[in-house]
Image 1 (cartoon, rainbow, N blue to C red):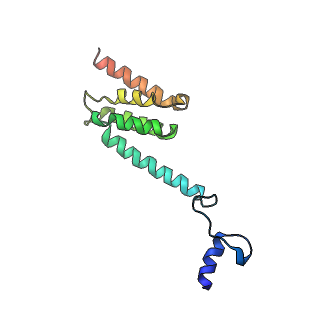
Image 2 (image 1 turned 30 degrees about the horizontal axis):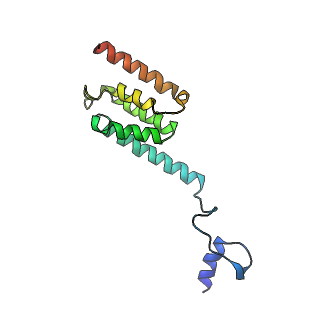
Image 3 (image 1 turned 135 degrees about the vertical axis):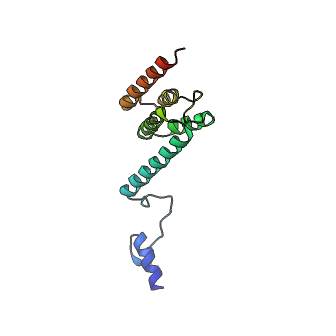
Length: 135
């Protein structure tokens, strides 16, 4: 019984006879900020792989755009960078040019001003594409 009261003691305040186990949906059981940042960084790296593998496939474009729309500018910016890095890849096709997907991804971002570098890169990639294959 002594071991169990030590466990409960770590989660509650107050006199020993009135200790309560916290509710899991309540405040106070949040992970430390460092762990959250590490998790988000790992998530971004995983999404980087997803964008690298799926961006050349036009069937995946709507899914990728939904991911960009549901995440913040940081993740969206890295996704656009990853897409634009595929510009010279052998995996890209005429049906799925990275510059077009990058432009569509930027259109999903609410605060586009935070993605100035990605916007400029996308404009340059679109210009290169139009110079190679005019309408």
